[in-house]
Picture (cartoon, rainbow, N blue to C red):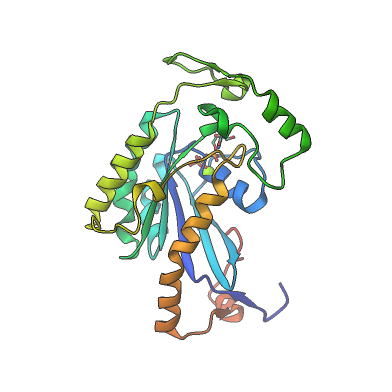
Length: 263
Ligand SMILES: Nc1nc2c(ncn2[C@@H]2O[C@H](COP(=O)(O)OP(=O)(O)OP(=O)(O)O)[C@@H](O)[C@H]2O)c(=O)[nH]1
Ligand SMILES: [Mg+2]
C-alpha cells in the first residue's frame, strides 16, 4: 500500500460466530474468493474488508474452539450483524449457539441484526449439491443437473462416516430441521427484547447454505449488507467524520495490516 495512503475505514462490522468445524471460514472464502479451499482451524480471529457499493464492510471470522471463547465478546463489540452458524448435520452445533455463543453478542450494537445459518446443506439436500456460484457453473454442471438421479438417502446413522466428502452423491441424515433454527431465532429476539422486529422475520433471517457449492452464500451476505445499510447511513450522519483513517497514525500505534489481521 503506497506510503501515506489511506485505508478505508469500515462503516460496519459483520461477525461470524459458531462452533468449530461448522464452516465459518469456508463461508468467508466462498463469498470473498469464490472458492472452497482447505482450511485450518481458526486461531483468534481475522477480518476481511468488503467494498459494498460506496460502503466498507468488515467481515470478522472468529475461532469456534472453546479455548478462544473469551475473545468472542471482543469481536462482537460494535457489530451491526452477527451470523450465528451451525452445521445441519450436527445437532450439538445448534445447541452450542444458544449455550455458548449467544451471550457473546451482548457487546454488539443495540440495533444489531442476527442471521441463523445452517451450513453444509450439500450433505443433506440434493438442491444444495449443485454449484450455485455463478462463476463456477460450467455446461457439464447443467448436464449433471439433468442427469441428477434421486440421491440415496442414508438412514440416520449414529456415527456418520469420517469423511462426508467420500459420500458425494449420498445424502447424510439432516440433524437440524429448519424449524429448529426458526425457533432458536425467536428465542434470540426475545433474549434481545426485539420480539416486535417484524421487519426481520425468521423466514428472512434463517438460511441453509453450502460453502462447498456456494448454495445461498451470496444471498446470506447480501441480504445482511442491505439490512445494515440504514445503520451505516445513520452512523455516517452522526459522525460526519472522514470515512478514512490516516495510516500514519495507525502505524504510530503499531498499526497492523488491515487485511487479515489476527488479534
Ligand atoms: N461438505 C461441506 N463441508 C464443509 C462446508 N463448509 C466447511 N466444510 C468443511 O468443514 C471443515 C471445517 O470448515 P471451516 O471453515 O474450517 O470451519 P470453521 O467454522 O471455520 O472452524 P473453526 O475455525 O475451527 O472455528 C473443513 O473440512 C471444511 O472443508 C460445506 O458447506 N460443505
Ligand atoms: Mg475457521
